[in-house]
Image: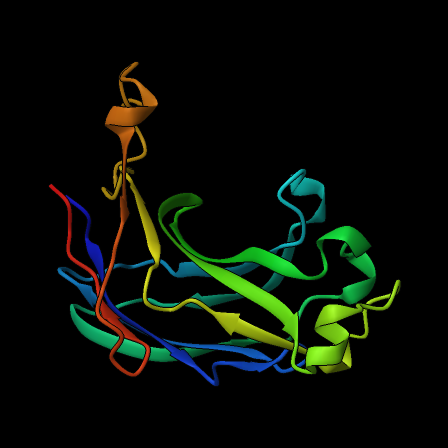
Length: 191
């Protein structure tokens, strides 16, 4: 059983200018003390065609973690626009929030993002080179995709690696749909 459960993610400052920082308020529950840090990452997917264009916007370490409920705001600068392929600059992409314990990813929360010009004329006739200062980023906060991975939470390093189960048995993915409520979403654990 996972020792950390994501309880709530609130998408802040949304919609927003493309060049504004990303901001998420995360709430999680720790069912027992964790002696080591949790590693949180925010990743912007620059192109659906290749992971080569993914950008880690920020990595933070939180810990050690006492038992109980915890909340923090995870803020990161926008992606480096020079690393986004021109053909993928506008339209739909993804931002991922991941969390690892001892180098093992145990949860990933993904949000679709729609990047478009706020000016109707620019939407109709987009310039050849994107003008990011005129692009609005809208994170579709009501439909996060949550993937959970089974990891070794124990202190013992000698514990065997997971058996040769299929990847489907090693992880659970859910497309979580919630009614829009100020961008706040409660996640339920899948058994």
